[in-house]
Structure formats: C-alpha cells, structure tokens
Image (cartoon, rainbow over all chains, first blue to last red; front, side):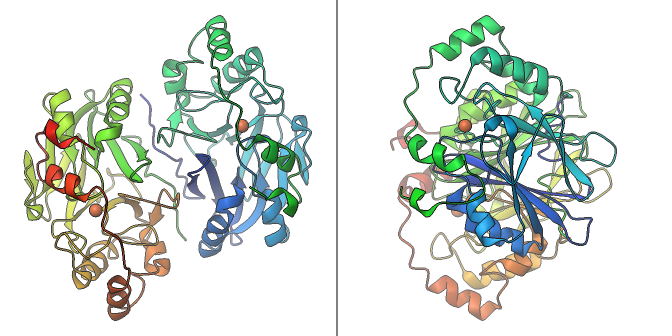
Length: 255
Length: 255
Ligand SMILES: [Fe+2]
Ligand SMILES: [Fe+2]
C-alpha cells in the first residue's frame, strides 16, 4: 500500500511546496524547526516568485542557509543569485557535473545538512548531464517516508526531455532505475514541474504507472525519440543565466 | 513553532492535493488505506479535471464513496454530478444550509466517516450562506496535525469575497474566528483556491499573518467593502449547475 501522504512529519521538518504558474515549477522549502535558529533551504527557487518565498521564510521565522538547484534549468531563471543579493550568508548549491558556478558544488553521495536533517545527493543525469536528485536522509531521526526531489529526471507520470543540454535517454533510464526506483516504494516523489495539477507521487506508483519509465529501456528510448517537442521559449535567457547560481546579472532579466 | 508539514501521516491516511489551473481550484483526495476496500472521498472536484482524478483513484486501488463540496461554487462547475454518472454508488455531499441538492445533506457537528477516519462538519458561512469547513477528526487514531478544508472561508493569507451569494463580512469574520481559529495552531489549512502558488498554511500562521482576518472586525469589514471585485465570469453557468450535486445536466456544460 502507498502511504502517499504529502510529507514525512517527524515534528522536526517544516515543509512547503510552492508553485510558479507560468513555468509550472515547484519550489520546495525545508527547515529543521527543532533548532532555535530554524535552518532552512530552498530547492529550485524561481526569480519571479522569490519575494513570495522570502516573505514566507521571514514570517515562519526561518534562517535560509542554502539555495539549491537540481539542475541548470532551461525554462525559468533561478532565484538563487537574487537571493544571495537579498539575504546575506545564503550559499548556492548545484552539482559539480552541471559545470555551473555555485558557492558549493556537490557530488554523488554528499550530505547537505540543515540542522539535524539532511539531503543526500544522488546523480540522475539524462535530462541534463548535471541533474541530481536530493533525497531526505535515511534513519529514525529523519522524515518518514523519505522524500525525493527529483528535478526533471522523474516527473509525475512523466520525465524531462532528453534532446538537448547534454540529454541522453539511455542515461536517464539508467539514472531513474538505479537511483530513484531503488528507494523504498513509499518514498514521496516531488518533481520540479507538474503541468496537470499533481503535487506528489510515490516511487511505487511511478514504477507501476509512469507511462515512460515503467516500460523497458527500448520502449523508453523510442518514446523519447518521438516526442517532437518545440524549443523552449525561455532557453536562450535561462540557460546562460542559470549557469551562474551566485550572481544574478541584471542584464539577463530582460524577458 | 509551526510544524507545517503538508499532511498528518498516520499511516492510515492517503492524502493528495490536486490543482485545476484555470480556476486555481484545489481538489483533495483522502482515503483510509488501512482498510482492505480503501474507502475514499473527494472534496471540491472540478468537472474539467475529473478524468485525471478518477484515473488516479483507480491506479491507487481506492473505492470512492463520497464526492463533497465545501459550498456552491461560482467559479467552476463541480465534478460531483459527473462522478455519479461514472462511478456507481458514490454519494454527493453538501451542507443543508447551502439549499443545494445532494444525496446526503450534512449539518454542523456531523461526522463523515471513510473507514476509521472521519471529517467533522463546521459551519463557516459568510462567503456563501452554506459554506462549511471539513476538519479531520480529533483523537489518537486520527491524522496529526489535524487538517482543515476551509473552502473559500479562509484562504492562505486571504479569504473568499462576501459581496454576493448570501455573503456577509460580519458573518465570515465570526465564522473564521469561532470555527477555524479555535482549532490547534498547528492545524493544516487546505483552502479551495490559491492564486499565488501556496499549497498549505496553518491556523497559527493565518491568525498571525492573514492580512484580512488577523485584523479586528471593523477593519475586516472595511477591507471587504472596498475590494471592487469584478463579476466572476463563470457565475451564471456555475451557480445553477452547482445547486444540484447529484445530476450533471449536459445542457449546462456549454462553456
Ligand atoms: Fe529542466
Ligand atoms: Fe466560492
């Protein structure tokens, strides 16, 4: 049975899912509220909704320490550079494999601590060469069920495209099957986007019902090669901007 | 401290929040997955996203027993009548005070059981005369923290309008303060709509930061009288259609 509640409530974790309508992007706020300073992090913040997110963080009395990306996005401009300009001390995080600039570059197996809680870095390339999935920790003092922030590697009943940004369908298939589908079935799947109004899924559900990744590798490759997707309208602005997660260059905010 | 996780995970409750973009409506799916038949209910289903919701229910192996509305919506057509045509045995639910037709009309204090779990009916008129808030049960075998499905009575950092459909700002103020703000501060607030990408709040947060309802009654009335809102475009179709939650009349689906 899937205990598909939308969060592991340990009492320590404060969790919020936030939506940006134009690019259908989810931003995630996590904090350890058992610590007096309430250390917090944002996963995949969007520039346009940053004021909303920072006001919420302030109202909740959290101390933002990390602004992280799952990958170099092509469809929206990351909020990490702007955050660094507004909230002193915040560090941006991205994977080393992304080749993007960040205050902290992380590698497979790294643990990102916020208070007593942590996120584990799992490499899930295939949508881009530097995609990672951040997974909450394993252990009795960590949220149960575990939560996987899958970026565009695994979407609810879907996945990210593999036709540019160093994408590769065999690689994506291998990533999802070896790094995500090996997690406990009740693990909650929180993607970077949803276009149909889903907010959460589980590993077990996607293993069974994902119309692409529940198939064999050959079928998956055929599906991915025949998507005939159009070029993303934000790409020429977003990708160069998102290669630097430290400084938001004003000249880039021209859309 | 606000333990604002998005769900009370008792292990019994399966919970899903689902979004309809056009009207920014949230539909909620709840089920008791500890029971073999997995009895489930939908709160505020939307006609346009019904196929998505019913497929999810089927994939999760749930048995839908109730399709409920928090009130007679003016901005979208309820999915309850269509559900009844597609899933035999489902009963529609609305409050007696709404004067709408339903298989089951509920009154303040009623408990709506699905398996071992239940929702309590709290009267929260003011946006419409028949608005209710459905609150998960109190007790060790019920989800913790409690969850309040507030409809349009209380929105995240906002509230529903009070200028038609029998609306009344003094009544809404009284409803929220006596029926919602008296719940434990960590109670999760799940509204019928959000227009800015928030998915959940807590009673404590809204008591402190709701820009309308955290104010005194006089200020609230002034705010509500000066909103200058335009007439909702769906109203003439939605309200007559939604007065009957049992049968979806095809002639009404003309938008
Ligand atoms: Fe992407
Ligand atoms: Fe309404």
